[in-house]
Amino acid sequence: MSVALVTGSCGLIGSESCLHFGALGMDVVGIDNDMRRTFFGDEASTAWQRQTLEQTLRQRYRHHAIDIRDAAAIDALFERHGSSISLIIHTAAQPSHDWAARDPQMDFSVNANGTLNLLEAARRHCPDAVFIFTSTNKVYGDTPNRLPLIETETRYEIDPAHRYAGGIAEDMSIDATLHSLFGASKVAADVLVQEYGRYFGMRTVCFRGGCLTGPNHSPTQLHGFLAYLMRCAVTGTRYDVIGYKGKQVRDNIHSNDLIAAFHAVYDAPRSAEVYNIGGGRASNCSILEAVALCEEITGRPMDLAFKEANRIGDHIWWVSSLDRFRSHYPSWDIRHDVRNILTDIHDSNRRRWRVEAVA
Image: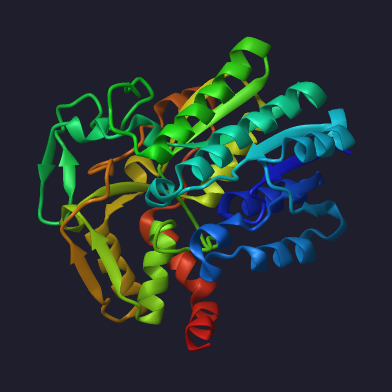
């Protein structure tokens, strides 16, 4: 039986990957030690999602609470399954640039060294497997902030005459820019994934994501923009708008759309590819625009606090160009916009969040 090995299997993208490929009849090996709880506290724990996976996939899902920094344990797991592993989806990470500054060694060891451990284990035991890595648009540092941006009432927008008006392409430089320590550790991992593709001929791909979101997120203040915003809207928790007057723009991709992209790559893999991935022009918003949607969906005003200082290296405007991915996989497209995503997050989680808020 073909095996899909998923790291961060109880996180947003990891769990959706497990459910998707498990439903196709693949055996799923999940790696997740709930490090998200260590990073962000009890509210961010993914333990609830592990239960969902085990109940839904039953014998098709095997969970391993392994730390990806443990090279010996990772190698032993890969050796156990060997060439039956046909797909590796690597989503496990320390995902916050604020948190990375508090403990740079932890951040780098998880994001860079952990990725190297997985690549080397794959090279040794299943070199023909498709290796999909969830990278980040933070590899570009603050270079996007040098684009010609125009301030409007609710958002920043790029000069429509600029060549990135349809979205930022993969040819943007990652050099000579302020990355944040998180961005630096993800650059290291990103380049490693590319190099294992080029040097060893492995079928690797980096997805440089914008905001990856959906109803399976375990959101917290430092990570999970739309899901955390909606959680605050549902529970009446104050939301801190950090920098740029709330006019900073992000493109948001529903986890289902991203998994569909993973499936397309699995069906027709390439080597050492890099794709910017996000909602693109079909699904993007500023914080102010997202707040207005949350208030409309919940029917209640939000409690907001505006912080003048922006996060170091934070993007003012990011919309991904999806042209490169579409040119390789023309049957794929974005199927969820921001309103649809927020409604899905709200409808899937409001009861659980209200119970947790009371408790």
